[in-house]
Length: 203
Image 1: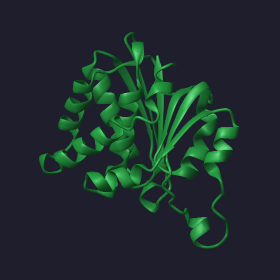
Image 2: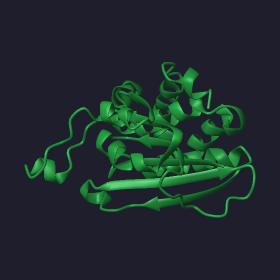
Image 3: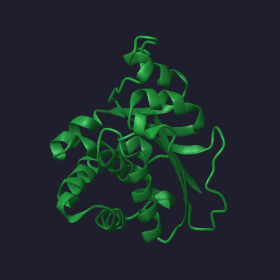
Image 4: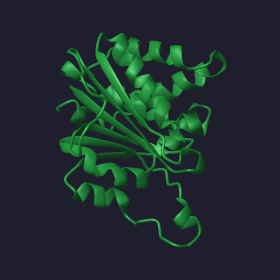
């Protein structure tokens, strides 16, 4: 069983990323369950989706705290908020993008400092990357979610592996034709982000 939690804020495409992952896993012959939590997504609030897949039957779409093999975080504060769901030995793949929540915007609260350092001190295996810059390189800032999906696709190995063509098929199914080239490029940039792949493949 592989459990992936994708966390972001409204408008970042966390739910879309979860659906692409689910489609890719189905293409690979897995049983898949997806749970989506929209929250206050249209006001910039937290959005989470959990994707569980296995070669055998998956009976529930839900995970408990400490149950995620991977967390994909599209924003740093969301990485910090969701870290409790990561299992011992799991991987947090996080974009370094910062989006101030409303309490920070209004001055009621401050955005936490040194989040990557704090996450690393929890014992999590953390890989942080500037997914936003890679998304812009692909043609649009909103493709950061697909960049992170590409990183995950390049990282999964062994029994967890999903063939690259299954990922590409999932994207072709999910993305309108006029946006497909940009999404495919974003996926490739994430997939080829070599800094993190060697270590993750040793899980």
